[in-house]
Length: 169
Image 1 (cartoon, rainbow, N blue to C red):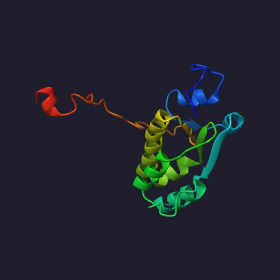
Image 2: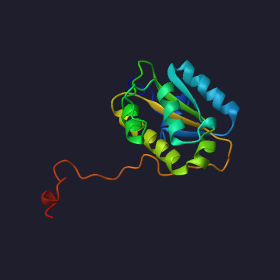
Image 3: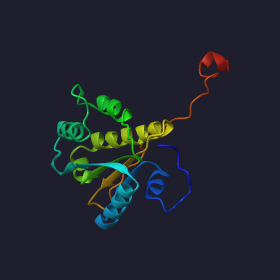
């Protein structure tokens, strides 16, 4: 997928969902269904992952690897998850990962659930650099559910001043 042809087009749901980050929370089922329908009409590949029955990290890995058709050698850990996500490729408009009842899973595995969304946010940006779109939709029941600091990146020194010695240190 190429860049957005009409940036700032607030009529396109994909632009609206990606403009402030890849991860979007939903409480209202009607709004969620409307947006999923729009993404489907825009030719996105949509993968629905129901977190209701995830009791552990292992449950997450089994579900994700099955639903996203990860390779047989998938290591069922977050490093392997990140590797597989970084390889997601859509021949259509992009990929949507739709997590249902993620707040239920997050209550049981808060740090792990945060790390999953952090990886997805980070990799979504990386994928945009090579023309792939990854949108993460998180359906929750708790109106107070929040997740911060996703995909955090630091400012980096440019390639000519990367080493301390190149900056006189």
